[in-house]
Length: 430
Image (cartoon, rainbow, N blue to C red; front, side, top):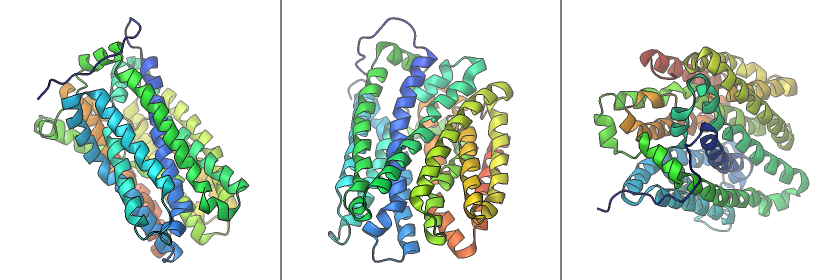
């Protein structure tokens, strides 16, 4: 087997600074989140009618959300496959293959006809969704962990927040594109070709992100920093056989559960619920969400400042409780007409920003140095799987059949998972 090595590109002399790393993390994560939120919005606004026209609206949404969840199931598999590729061929080859797979899946989705035209459309959509998940998992570059290690001790909360900014920014851009198209394109044209445009934009952004991230991870200084801190791939067997690897992995998956559960319950789920139970124009709701995404960005900035003053662990725990309280109020807010729904979105996005800003790498420092690279990636994958993958599907099914109280229970369970993980492992969130 050939030795594991990357081919660093020439760059400036000098040590890598946290600001250098933060820029790379923000660019890469924004493109990834934009790609995923484009699909999430389309799974409510387009795919039920395009791919499941033979089903009632509720069943079509549930079927669409089932396909939506496949990427999160595939993501840990993609991470493990990417680690194997990197061990053999290097970080640059792995990242190139991952971003090529993500771009191919996204572009193919934009070209798919509906079920009325081609009977294999649903299978093709599901395949592309799985490929997206595999690619996102394999695209792990270790930069968030490097950022956490290099950040000054008194500013770790701030730098942890920097990579997470990509979530509300990516969602805001995706929602803006869909809202603009739905506002300015006739409905028949939107369903014929308009919805495809955001997918092509996502493909273009992936190309830009690929070159930006390759320039970083193959840079002499970055490559040296990654090797210095042992941010190199290990196998799952090595991680689980490590003295604290398996336990930390399980705790890490639940430490940020409340934050991950909230993400899709304020972005994707309410659009589906309102489309079934309200006459409110979804385009207006999208514009509202765009404005609330700005609140989410503001919440993240506040969270970075707050975590550096009271600690990331305290911040995560406090906000988990706040999410639980928000969950209890959710039925009254969503059933409270336009005013109540507006408040639901505003409070939800603020909490999204405050809590999700500190969710990245909550357990990274608790792994052994040699296992941190894989451990941080897999703990994030499992948090997405347990907290967010089925959130729209479960919330919509339960709320349609048993009422909005089910959403409260979902968010309360996320709160319980986070508080339990923080209580079990004292190093999580440190």
